[in-house]
Image 1 (cartoon, rainbow, N blue to C red):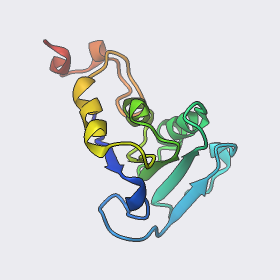
Image 2 (spheres, rainbow, N blue to C red; image 1 turned 90 degrees about the vertical axis):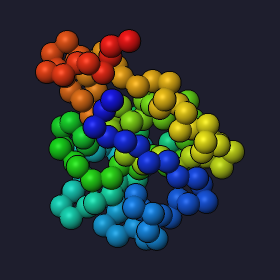
Image 3 (cartoon, rainbow, N blue to C red; image 1 turned 45 degrees about the vertical axis):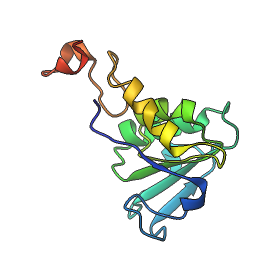
Image 4 (tube, helix red, strand yellow; image 1 turned 30 degrees about the vertical axis):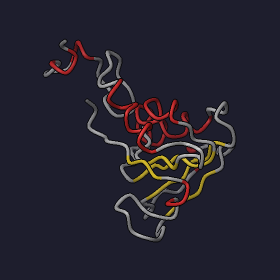
Length: 141
C-alpha cells in the first residue's frame, strides 16, 4: 500500500482540517486554471484544488506537480464535484483529503481503497515501480 492514506470528508464536514478540527489556517485555494509553478508555498500547510466537474482532470495534474516537482508535503485537498470513482486515482496523484460531493456515501467510498490495494506503476506518492522497490511483497497474491 502507498505511504499516504487519504482522509475522506462529507460535504457537511468540508470546513474541517485533516485532523478533524475546525478552521483552515495557512490554506491556499487554487483554481484549476492556475499554474502550480507560480504558487508561493512558504508557510502554506493546506492547498485546496477544485474539480468544477468530475470530468475536468486539471486538478490531478496540479496535485502531481505539487507533490513531485514542488515537494509539497502538506495537505492537498480535493473539493468540488468529487465522486467515489475518482478517489483511488486522486490518492495516487498526491491528494491527502477528499471532500465528497453531497450525494456520495462515505462508507462506500472507503471500500474503494480495499478494492485497489497496490499498483505496479509508480505514482506521485510512491515514485518507484514495484519491480524496483526493495520490499515488493505488497503485490503478492
